[in-house]
Length: 136
Image (cartoon, rainbow, N blue to C red; front, side, top):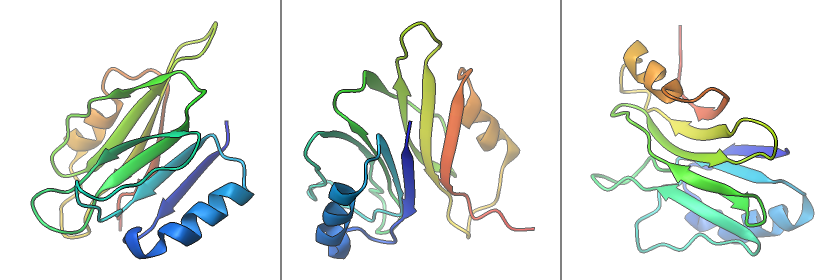
């Protein structure tokens, strides 16, 4: 499984460059953070299924996961309030499913251990990628 993670800090002005880049590399899954997309914005790539969590209260934030359409998967809900995230669960033949989570947490919000535990809740195999703005 080849995964790309990118904190794009607004993908709208970079969409064409992003699409050109993805055509040059072979990735099964693409995790995006700080997409800053509105629900009316499109984000589609040929041969990929896109799952998004857009920020609706104010501009900024937002996460997305794009996975090759040929990979069996489904979107999975996440129970967090301070950490933004998009989750997919990949079904694997003869093996337990694996969840991939694209996360973003604003540096203005506190790091809450309960929120971190919620990312792993009910997920035996889990990969978290993104920007938690975790500082010492």
